[in-house]
Amino acid sequence: MHGLLVRALAVLDAGRQRLLARRVPGDKALGARGEDLAHRFLQRQGYTIVARNYRPPNGHREVDLIARQGRTLVIVEVKTRRREEFLPAERAVDAEKRRNLTRAAMSYVRRAHIPWDFVRFDIVTVILEPRPQLRHTPDAFHPDRHERVRPVYATEVED
Image (tube, rainbow, N blue to C red):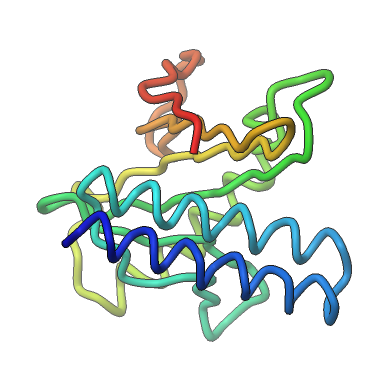
């Protein structure tokens, strides 16, 4: 039953992407497709998605996905590329992007009354061509950690 539901949602996502491609610029449609794939991937991994494209009321920053994994609130940045040609897409999450994600996450955490100790920042990379591939990097960074640790890619799948 669960597999049937996932397939049905994938078909609906594909139709939504075709409609989006006609109405919005290419990069926005590309990002929306990546977020859809990341959303479904995280659900299959047991995460509960609680928000998409969260924008705090006090700013223009945005969090792509907010999920729950047990007691942990997971702030997810989704990076989508057609092809991975030069550098890994995870490298696009630079210091400024991390600061913006942290500010938006703090806003959400305050409003949801969640202790900061239960917040984690993940990155999901979606490479669309030749076949969609997803790379999930749990605990990719945390604003309270200053050591330079390379993330370990915990999960890499083809969708």
